[in-house]
Length: 321
Image (cartoon, rainbow, N blue to C red; front, side, top):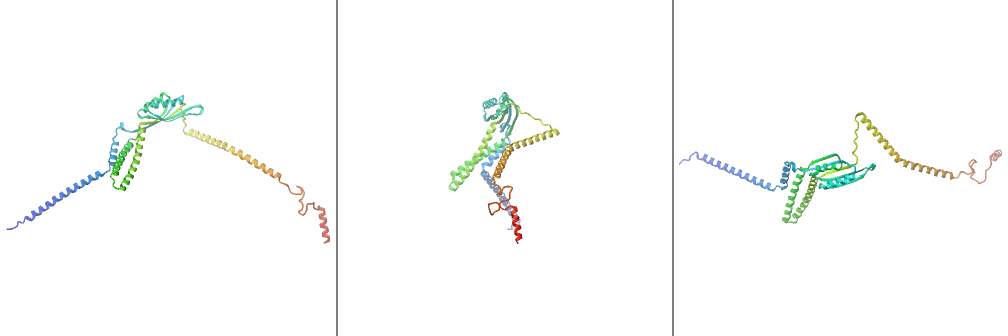
């Protein structure tokens, strides 16, 4: 019986097909394994990153009515009686549900009183409060500033949530710790996370307070501040130079007034020193023999020979020699 020549090719094709099937199975298995590893890694991703990403996504699509805005303002009120106006403003703010953080009343030049207040007003009543101030005095120089802090608030919320979850996981690890070293390490990390969490919570509370309660700084005066219009060009330069000259002269006058008492004191001291020196010199004794006569010789106390006797003695000595 003869063997068919086509049998080896059929066998080869069958072997090749089985190899291809095995390769496809291996590829499918490796893909499944990689998907399982990815799922495991996804499970190990900390909740901090996921919560932070969620916070950023929320921050980009916050509606206008949910945005957090900090409003601050400066006002000047002109009132005939600033002290009475300060009291009326305090009552108005407290009636609106706000509070007075600082209050001052002063008595300036010419017995003109003025006052200042720093008040906190609910953000939804800031406009009504500013309008109500017109009933107390003439409102001037109103300046209101609104700052959007929505992104900062959302970021703080996300970080607070992440740290809270991290602290809860650390507390679980502390209960499951089997060694003292693991317990101490978890406790140390938990302490650091709690400190950071409290700091973030404090920042978030501060933002919430400033968003809910707007801040107004109010100045109360009896007369409106004068507005000075300075000319430009040559006249402006001349006016500025004249003003600088007056300032310099005023500084010189002030310096002279400050130095004058010291100069007077120094002059009095100098006069006293010179008087003492003159007294000392007057009491000092003069030379012997009188002020006009020659000084007495060192050998004796009596008067020495006159000029005639000295010449005679010298002449007789020469003759004898």
